[in-house]
Image (cartoon, rainbow, N blue to C red; front, side, top):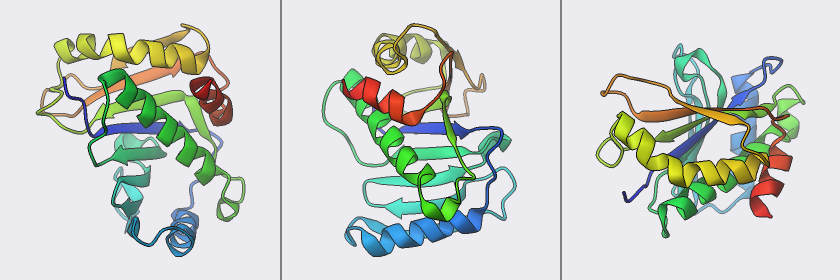
Length: 192
């Protein structure tokens, strides 16, 4: 399986207070401060109930505060192909998502009102041709996904379940871990 277009959604804590305007401020600052060749623009879909929220569009990946299925979270959407085997691609997607998620929740504009909970994550393949939403795909990805999660959580104390049974939906796995969910700790574990 040539796995590409990996998405990682790190859910917010229950205490988080989402203010889309503050995310727009963060994304505007990033656009102004960062490489102009990468960040292109932002899109505000906050008026859409249960939708993509606010999206920062870049050439390599999109970042959004997503509200799909009525659960807020930071959604990392890698768009361009990544080299390496499946395990390397999955590991890199988690490192990228945790790094940007940590940076985002630390942004002054969010006024310490948002925390992402690394113990509640969705792993999504945004390509139905590569990863059909089936039990076979679920079984095929586990040998590459489980070692990454064991490294990230420092134990095998996590569960995986398919989010959707409808084959028309994207393939997604709900990851639930017995962890404090601190993004910095999870990133350190993966980088070790």
